[in-house]
Image 1 (spheres, rainbow, N blue to C red):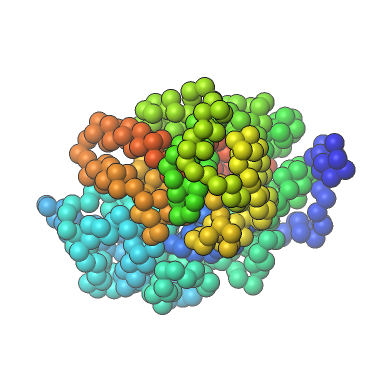
Image 2 (cartoon, rainbow, N blue to C red):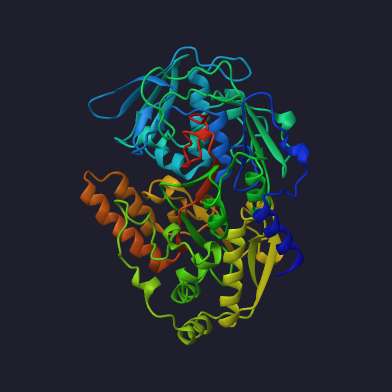
Length: 526
């Protein structure tokens, strides 16, 4: 054991933090001190699909609809809706009294501008707008959609955090530029003067927030009645240091607990461990714009020797397999769209010699394979190391590029040649509802340079996804989902590496925590 590892594990065992105490001074007001899974570097939820930005959006912004605990859409900012008999005209009426954090009223014009930006930038928004003829504000509180064909998933789509409503002046920002000023109408205000990237973020309860008066707060739906004054995020990349801070009552919760710390935390009667209801599916993402992975034979060669167990054990450890699944396809195991279709490509015996032949047949010329390695995000760092080792066994030359998570999010959007600032291989996780169905999954899109990072072009996947959206029955959608999974494992836009059920930790004075998200508006001190 090296000196750093010894110090960190000693800190966990004794509950002594290695961080400065001024960061954790006990507040006079009701404050929840939280360690997020990664640093917040991008503030705009429409601009990026990063999970940390979506969590930020749940605090600061609101959406026209929310999703309940069955992932069904419920009105959120909407007071009422009217849909004509043909399903081609939707009229949405905003609730009265909604205000942004700068004091201005929330108007239909703000919602229309925000939704248009969502439709231009976000893949889910683009799906909606493929059926939108016009969207207009017919009054300050009324939004009218005119559709070219019925789109029954309109309310489900508008529940996305990427469809967060912001003032028109901000929503008119070009969609290829991330918004820097944060003005929402959600239950918390973002405090820009107390945000230090890589260190901490502070959110303050919004005194002017008007919660719904009906329903029950579940997931992102229902009345968001806040019970705390502030949420403070403390960015602690070292997981052992974070756990020590939790034990020492210097923080109140940690978003993601590595499995190696489970035995220690289970012994602490002041700490509760909470398993997320939906898994994150870890993926290996190829860059389809540049050789050698623009060639499907190269991608199939890599797929043929992937062992999900290796990745899951490296990222999560071997001791607690109940928190991960190594027989995972496109959809979350055990959910309605999941199936074994095509999974034999992931579960068959690994044949390195055959994979080397495929690589040779694909014309690999020995160029270095650039692997992006976000070293401050331990699970993805583990995936990068497993991949580097596998590629070396296959005779591929590799370049592991170490960076922090914020730099990784910027780098993965670079479409340049890998030798000029681009990349070949990246890692991420599809989170929550992205794993329930094809409408929410950006990784299966086949829209090329206009799509999600990696930029595959695949007309078959696009058509299957469209068929799923407009299917009439659950059975039809399940059959189409099987076709989608089969095509993903044939064309290989990405490789599923396994499903991980994140484990959060919370000090026991805190109750009513929603780990999916996570959401903080139900949280209270017992």
